[in-house]
Image 1 (spheres, rainbow, N blue to C red):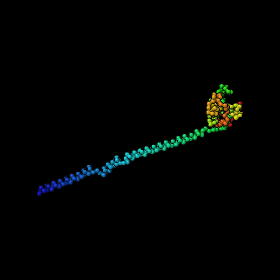
Image 2 (cartoon, rainbow, N blue to C red):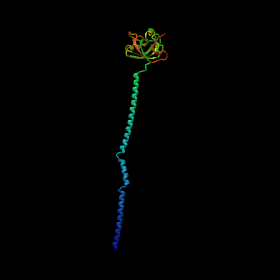
Image 3 (cartoon, rainbow, N blue to C red):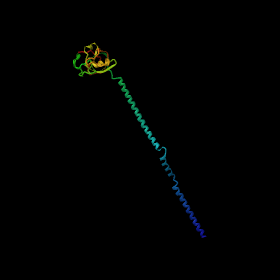
Length: 230
């Protein structure tokens, strides 16, 4: 009887201990092997951050988008600059084609001269303007000194300036310009004179020479050329 009581007690104690161990084991298993919902969500978030398809690719896409925008802006700016440069070049080209403004124009008969103070061929001395005799220096009976003039003949043109007075008496017969020897010969046939004093051709005059005043010199006499007056 007493032995059965002891066995019963031991059995109860053992069962209680086993039940307690079972509960503790379940709890331990629950803590160690089965992550809580919070832990699972945290790990899932970390994994999504590390492996989500949009991670680095999205960042690269943003860079690509930004780079594309910058390139597009640069390209657009470059296009604007090119258009502006093209417009400027076109304007310059039009101005060049148009040429300088012509203040006055007409036609006359021209002779030639070379006055350098040598006295050759009736040389009257140094030019009246004080400038040395040179290519592109013309003599007018009435235009102001340093008037800029373009002369044309036979499809050729030369731009020079009034640097002397003349021709004298011929201006009364319609010969209103005296050209330097080099300009005269070039306009006639594109050649060079035999010397400073001789054109080297039979013609002594260019009939129908076209003249254009591009800039007036200081002084009176602006307008149609008038015959020389002593």
